[in-house]
Figure 1 (cartoon, one colour):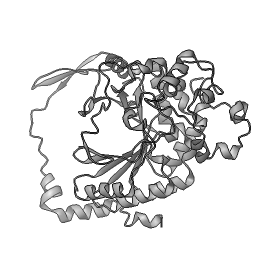
Figure 2 (cartoon, rainbow, N blue to C red):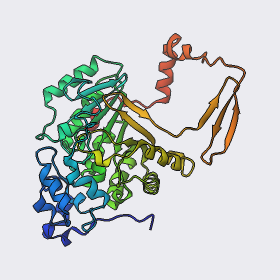
Figure 3 (cartoon, rainbow, N blue to C red):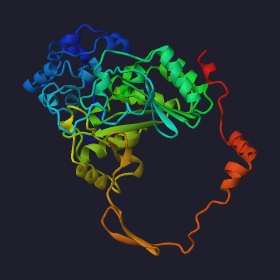
Figure 4 (cartoon, helix red, strand yellow):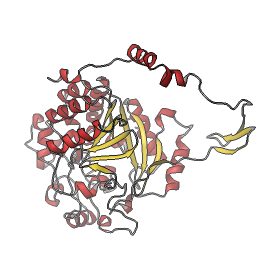
Length: 416
């Protein structure tokens, strides 16, 4: 029972899609064009509660609702506590704003250097290419942009991004997000990747996308062929509950991994959705089985209307306590608070270091047994070879890199 693979209801059993062919259903363009957003549409798929109807009507001007037919078919039609329904369908509680709620909880606007480009950390940037999603999470930290009319960066705005990156060679890592960047066309994704790879200082490109979860039809062989031409390239996706790990989503993720694209997962700790160690432990273990590395577990941001999703931080620490030592280390993500106002990600963890002095440290393990670790007498931790590797002999370092790294001379050639 714990290892079952969830499957959607057969779509033709739902009156709304009785005449939809298999070819249409598996076409991501059809899925996007037939996004569900209204009470009239959704009540043909699930039995809406009074609170859900109130939420759908009351949030229309504040934050849009939208979910793909595929994702809608994952919902339990009779149980309003279904974790997918909780994430996708607004409730009346979303209309209430806490005094601590924030329009831009991560302070991204403050760190925006040109339209779409957020530069907070010294060596990496966040590139927001659009404001469109195929499912609008009710706890979305970017409600301020995804609630607006569909937009994406123009050619001139992309040019400004590339110019900024060329003038800031310390930036080596670009995270592409949105909205959802995989809603761009194949040709636009290829253009973006080709342009980034023409900037010598950019070493790593990452995508943040929830489409492998909520619209796996988008992860086509054609898209994967484009992505794999621009290694090193990573994809972080967003599974929150094991119910989301369907046969379709597993297959989409497998296509990416088989193309040499490492997958990470960023979950959000959500009250009543996944706020138990049993649920999250099962999710993380199943992600690892699907070759997806649990990367972050986020404390829910202080975004407007999301108060009902937030747990006490102590709950998150308790969950981490019950994960560490009770499952594989690579199945345990880092629990973080993205500090309100733009402070960046702050790790939060149980306390394992009990005391320390110059002679020893005292630690405890996951079973609460204590251990003493003797400190060394030698304390000089300088690395003498550093000056050779990094500064005094740059020609040796370049030789080392050429010998040990495979460099793609012209990734764009694979697209042309």
